[in-house]
Structures are given as C-alpha cells and as structure tokens.
Image (cartoon, rainbow, N blue to C red; front, side, top):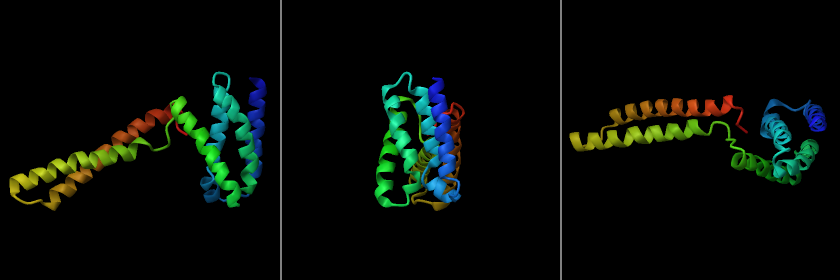
Length: 162
C-alpha cells in the first residue's frame, strides 16, 4: 500500500509538471482534475478491485499522454480510455457524474408543475393561459433544481463524484 501511495504521489507531481503551462480552459477541457481523481480512487480501490488494479497502468499511460493531447490522434484514445475508467467507477463503485441530479430534477419539476397547470387552465378557462404556466414552470424549476442539488450534495460530501 505504501508503494502505491508513493506511486500516486509521483503521478500527481508528474501531472503538475506536465500541466504547468496550461491555461485554465485547456486544463478543464482535458479533464485533468478528474484524471487526478481517477488516479487517487484507483489506488484506493486497487486492493479490492481487479479492474482498478489493471487501470493503474492505463492511468500511468494517460498521464504520459498529456503533452500530446493537442493532436487528435492522441486525444481520441485518451478520452476513450478515460471514459471507460470513469464508467467503471460509476457502475461498480457507486460514483456519479458531477451535477447529475440537479438538471434532471429541474426538468422533472418543470414538467410536473407545467402539465397540470396547462390542463387546469384549458379545462377550467376553456383555453391555455400562458401566465400561470410560466409561473408554474418557474416554481417547478426552482423546486426541482434545489431538490436535485441536495441529492448531488449527498454524493459530493461522500466524495463519490467523478
């Protein structure tokens, strides 16, 4: 375990060295912070998960690909491998993508408030009125977003987002 922690520290230093001259937009585009997080989580899960143990060598290669990611020939395989490792964490270890629930709940809130109000205005007034529908959509959006953000917060506090 100590050997893996040392390896992780070396990889983190290597990432810092390779990305020292990156702009913030390039750093975010290449998802470097998520790569560092995948390294950390893979080391933590490696003793109990064979796939995570195998992913350590793949992640090592991904770190070394960072300087070459401006070339499309290098970026596509990088993103494919990166997404495969990330999908493993979502499926096997209970991680979620950032901001998964807030937009979903916001959409559900809009639909669950707008459709009944539209039906109510149509059947009670004989026509669809826009003002109550827009008010219902705004209320549903806010309520759904805040409920989704609460659910995202549970995962964020548990550090289960990648």
